[in-house]
Length: 252
Picture (cartoon, rainbow, N blue to C red):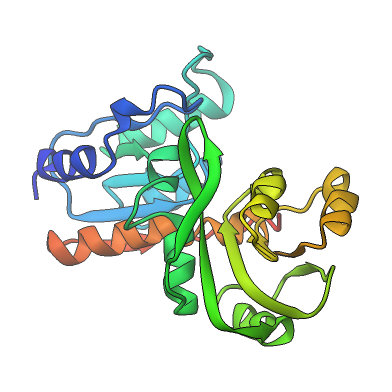
């Protein structure tokens, strides 16, 4: 498989050039000699991600959290040098999709979580530079939060933290992966009574309490594995390639 076919698909699907407000540099960052047989996907760009890509024979690596920042030039030394060296020495192309992934209607982490939980999409919220990044679902009949917790522990992760404010019945659930707690007020304004997100925040505790919004925190990493993995699976199936998800949990 020639890499321009994969890159053309990704550029058309995610349109990285349109996300000028994203602090991460998106799209193709490092090219290879031109052929792809095995895709690697990962959440982060820690140096171990690149070593694992080399170990597993990956020749096209994609991550959600980017390697380079738009507004900051960095010297190619120390661990940055090690990462770039692994890519070039082993002929690995590298592609980054941060906010373009978060806002994609098919492959976003939030849509992938909805799919895992088998919940129907009803609407969006959580404005980020004019684009909603959060999704929500409505239940025809209120569900006890204990049933939702059980489902999350089965389908998403068992390592959760809960703020069980308000009553135990849930009518509308909002989902924003990663640091979605910052959109708590928008969740309240959209009548969301349970927010599922990644990171918890000390400063938001009493705000959630006073608003009566229940929160389930699944970890930043755990909530952001699903979208990039879904992209890799799609490319593998539709372009006749191998795909490996490089799973390096951070515990956060």
